[in-house]
Image (tube, rainbow, N blue to C red; front, side, top):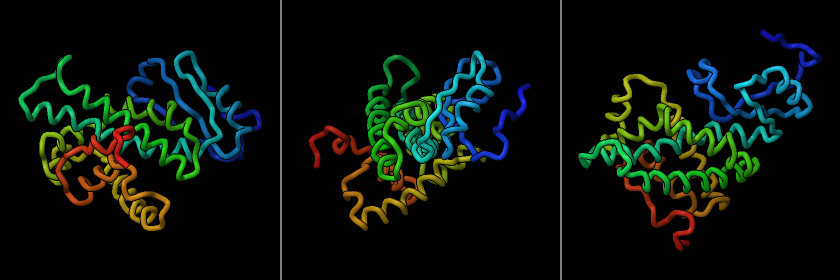
Amino acid sequence: MPVLGGGLEGGAPAAIGGPCIAGELAGRVPTGVVFTGRDPSLLPGLRALFSTEYYHIQTSSDAVGVEVCAALKNAYAMAVGFAAGIHEARGGTAGKVAMHNYEAAVFAQAAAEMADLVLLLGGRVESAMGLPGVGDLLVTCNGGRTSRLGRWFGRGLAREDAIAAMEGATLESVDVLRVLDEALRVYTGSGRLAPTSLPLLRHLCDIVVRDARVDVPFARFVGSGAS
């Protein structure tokens, strides 16, 4: 095992973002992540120290963007998970013909909204469009707790019933959306966000905070022609 050294001791902290399911990493499945921090001079040394033939590291000085994406992907993966639950509620089973078009439309809107939020909070759009954003969102949709919670909502369960169905699993998305609901109120009230902006996120907040039922506002998505 490598040990920390080479003048890295006492430096500013660094964070890791991007898709990295622990079980796959333990199995040495090729993985791409992003190391970020407020002291970019440390990142090349950390990359050299921790890189392996299966653990591939990119570096980024956009600490804000990477960390914002790490939170946002938990919220948006829940929305992508709705499709599987709706499909099941209609009597469908897994297969090539399911609700993958629905999933793709929601995923694309999630990517656009993540980019807008990262910019609003002082990050860079490439973080949202790279491993920390869409990369981590994809892996969370495929193998994360948040997408499973979305599936229960898609099946029509009320908030507390959906949470109970997760059998005590840690649900970062619930806490993230409660914080984002307050942030949306503040930013909209101050004029930094239009009331019609971020329609998918606002719907997710309604579901988690106000126990609304799933009714994804596709007509208000980016490129829909809505103002």
